[in-house]
Length: 288
Ligand code: CAA
Figure 1 (cartoon, protein in one colour):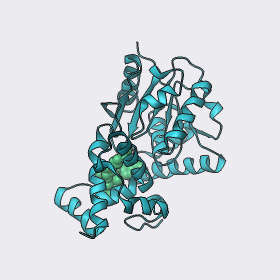
Figure 2: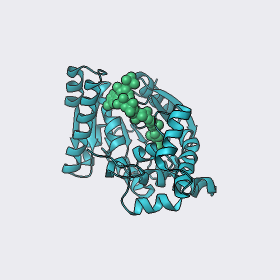
Figure 3: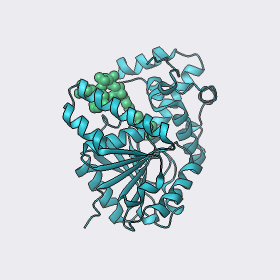
Figure 4: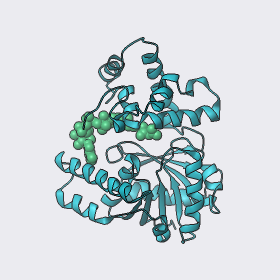
């Protein structure tokens, strides 16, 4: 028997958390989103509403389903409200200290001993998060891809302590409840997709940094020459340059492989607040 993961909590309502909350609500799940404070909770609701509206405008969703999904979502700034959840998905900033503290707190708050605590981390060890709780067997990685409502993949990451029962439960959640496709990865920084994607993105940053080609030409090269939906620097801007740097940093810390070391230009851009789409400027400039 698998554990039915019907009451879902999402911690963090940024682009990943809001996307995860949206797909859970669209799947008809009772979904509670927790943000740091009331303005952040309002911003998270706005993010979901904007994305649902976009789906309606693109003919992907009828208006009634969009309204139902939004009505199904509850936004809060109190972690304590997650007490009755069967599954909590953490999607806060890619910072190991912040995530570990959160897992320790969630372990105390979430009452159901069967409940699963999942992380949307891209590169932080699931074992580290599991060991911050008293239920490492029910801690697992559920790594979604941006934009979550559009991309069908979820990586399921098991630590050495994650139980087979937990894996079966989240597999069923991903496939049967969300209608997405799961792949499995061992608990090593970068999992499957970022182990391939991050060196590619960093190579593009190094190419721009050296003046070898312009960001526009690098992106056009991969869009028009290889049919990628967006070039590597546009994709880095979409993911967020701070997030790319944090993922690369975790991968470098784990493997000490120069391929994963965040290039100086990326670090400087993050220090300058040039974070990509979310700040209006990264390798490209964005309006609206
Ligand atoms: N809800 C539902 N569907 C939506 C939507 C929404 N909110 N927004 C857009 N869509 C649909 C559109 O209807 C469209 O569908 P069709 O192709 O069937 O018409 C499709 O998504 C593309 O949307 P748009 O036409 O608006 O935009 P686009 O063609 O410029 O594509 C994009 C935008 C989806 C972002 C595309 O460029 C893309 O897929 N880029 C690559 C993204 C990627 O690689 N993401 C992975 C990042 S790595 C990661 O996330 C993990 C990590 O750890 C770093």
